[in-house]
Image (cartoon, rainbow, N blue to C red; front, side, top):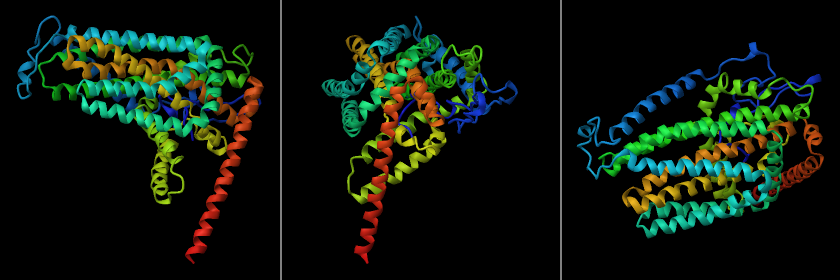
Length: 480
């Protein structure tokens, strides 16, 4: 299964749908989980709305949240306790109350920096893709360590320890996958090349970033009102955590919607041999967009709740598993958790079909999803640092609150930019699993490199399986 993907997200089970090509060469693809038909390919009558319950939950959640955000923000906008809410907070320890606009400007910085970083990522990926990916991998560990030191210096022991652990885990993961990075960078470069040949795909990312930024204006208005309320730190933190979970879900839904749109478009381009091919359906991007925001939107809302956490656990377990060595007891425990996570991945996975073709060995070797996630996290941390530093000079008591939520805002905006690359990676692997000649027709040199790595990985797996069987037989003979 894949280390690639999602952004984030991402909904993994609504990405690459069923497709048929002229002459019946390609009959199905990896959309096992969502069971949705292809954008622009399947007839209209075959489309059915999926997971309508979760679609309703998401829409209702947005409406209710919008009301609460408006109440929290207006309550302290230009005048303290405008709606007389403080009388309900007497049971909490009161702190110095401020106005909504006091903190809203810090979130404005976060939104601006996050949007700028997302646009810069997309712009620089076209010309300096390899350098940008290496920057994500190698700078993130150092950045986490520096933030940890700053937290200890500011007497924020908990956050200092948390960032120190994050830096250590990041370093161990990079060490565990360092031999896979050259192939990963190659795949990402080809994915970027594919994306940049489709300017309409980039426009989709820009549009969704703008829409997400508009929602963040409303969200940050309410979050600033929460920070300004005369609640104790405990009450403010609980409210901010709830708001952050909502923002994370909303951001994941946006990312996965872009992922479905872009994947459908790229998949069609690869199947038909080019954007200008005569067999291409008319207005493929619009049909993919309509498919994503209607029949598949419920599945996107559902999958966005789980896939990011599942994939993060999977990446970390893979890295730990590769470094255990011959410790059979520890390996057994890790394998148990690994297979548990793999079971979840099979349900929420955009690469379900490749299991039956052998290409899962190639997909598992690639860690492009983790590299893109590192870029997303780095962008979020830079955003949080910018807002946090300004807050430090104005109100040191609120640095962590503002920095935490600003980091989340930056991650979502940068993730929306990088998801188009992840979608191209997904489409490349699905097409290679369906019919390798599709990749050969698109880029013969890249096809040869993929085939060579796949051959090496299958040989490696075979030799490892023989070694495991031999060790098992040896242990049985010794015990006898």
